[in-house]
Image 1 (spheres, rainbow, N blue to C red):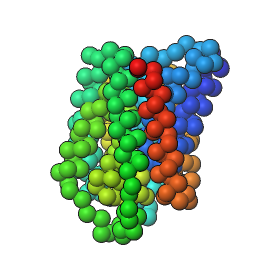
Image 2 (cartoon, rainbow, N blue to C red):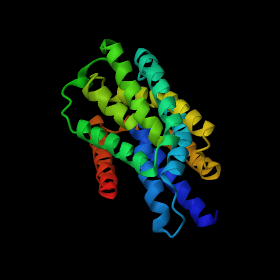
Image 3 (cartoon, helix red, strand yellow):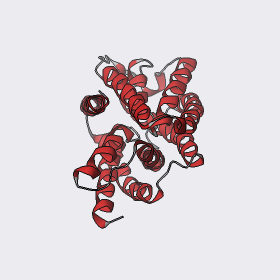
Image 4 (cartoon, helix red, strand yellow):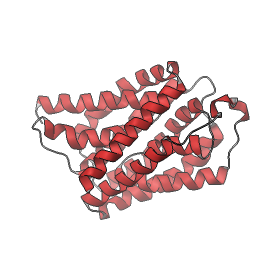
Length: 258
């Protein structure tokens, strides 16, 4: 691999992980299309959908560790939510990650497109008053949370994402969790999810280790910086940035599929 390609992969990892640390997502929603489309723009070889999903799975694992570490103080992590959703998404993402080897390149992109489309629609649903709820008074249905996390895990395991770009709107819209608690807790759940997806990808030989290692180094540097920035930014602005990113990705993927 030449130096230009290595720098390109590093920058994709750094920018994607900074944004993911700030918004509480694993970053696959951003890095999946970046890895698919940016290297060919600079004349480098294109990754396949299987390679991109494998690199994403490993990178998300490390990016979310950095983010969770930055949010560990301040009561942002809801342990009950993390336990229920984390367990369910781990099972779902392992099944999805392992089963993804049976799918074609096109099918993986379609699954990704469907996930991005659902997330985009949910991000634009109005969320009234959730940030007025004190952290110690947050209530939600545990079994609904677990069921939704399992479904997200299945789809996310297939595309090597950890599903946080879907978890965040579900936690905001359906479970009514305050924005900062959603961002911090979704990073922890995404970390658990990425274990299942990564193990599924490794056991079926879908990982390209050298680019994955470059992405990991970039994400360990960038994710904590993004998380620190995220604590200072207004929650409404965070929601708008995330909604625009998800919508743009959904449009790009679907325009390619169709």
